[in-house]
Length: 482
View 1: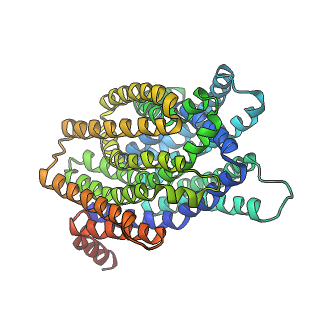
View 2 (view 1 turned 180 degrees about the horizontal axis):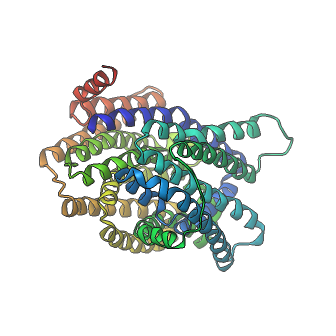
View 3 (view 1 turned 120 degrees about the horizontal axis):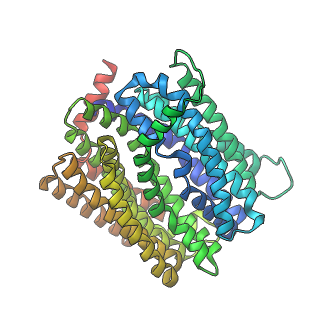
């Protein structure tokens, strides 16, 4: 299973590295520079506001379905048409609650059209993720890898035409960005649907209310996990925009820094999407997952620590390079946020394992405590330090969740943590940090060269401290082509 995971994660990351970085830094960043921090801040706050209600749209169906299909592939024929009907109903409920909540929250009528199309995007995203959960549940990992980047490839094409195609004399509107997302997700959903449809003998839609209610009952524990996780990871942007007099600008600055965290977190999402069906299948068969957990955790931390430390030292240079209106304050916000990537990457591994094991109630308790910590920290820190305060709150909360997840995996799954591994990781962190400090303070090359040196050194240290093992890489490639 480690070999299968390694082959597929390398393929998955390679596909995504070809497309998603260009979208994030070429398209998304350019749009923020074009429309300005305040306008983008409004979009970012509305995106996170509507995302907080995503539980009503998804209701845990994606993770429930991924786990179920991985363990019982024959259920696809029964579940697929009924879940599509269920998601249609949930989509209408979600839209209604979004507008009711928008009115209660005091959003002006002028942004209601933007709220609608952003909420529509969440419906489409949830649909695509559900369709992909069937693809990965059936073990079609490489097909899912291609689908995972299709929406961004389409968005690159659409937005490139709008930004640089001279299709209109009007300046770029933030609404155009949202409309382009709508079309990209619609096409992606159609492609994913066709792939899943080919795996079915027939497709007949019937309103089977007992089954729909049964699916809701089975998926609601997963829904609660997603909702609680969403609250403690997305509430910060909403609180910034709502609490501060200059909240839209501060939300835009926070979004500028968060973009890099989102770019890094793509890797964690890829790991989680690939690991969930693997963990589910192994646990159902009674196989020991310790080896795969250690292997995936060390592999993702090798990249996460290297990337986070490198970005931390060169945070101001990166922000000035990326944003036309950047100030040193942008770098301060990024410095706190990027360190959370170390915790987030580990959370993806352990959350996926606990989800596959069905340990949802204890995860929900941990997330509930995390929400309280996060909201309290945000309330006090945002008032005093604005977006930087929200970044500090996120950093503290994410490491609390990581340590909590590690304890839960020991209790629930019996994952053992070895001191030798902890020592190797600690030495690796020290080596990368010292290299980053030396590169930043003492090397006289251009900053981008020094930044690259830190990244390459981190990769080398990952092999030196055996977080990534050459033997495993060579064996996997050899077995693949033999």
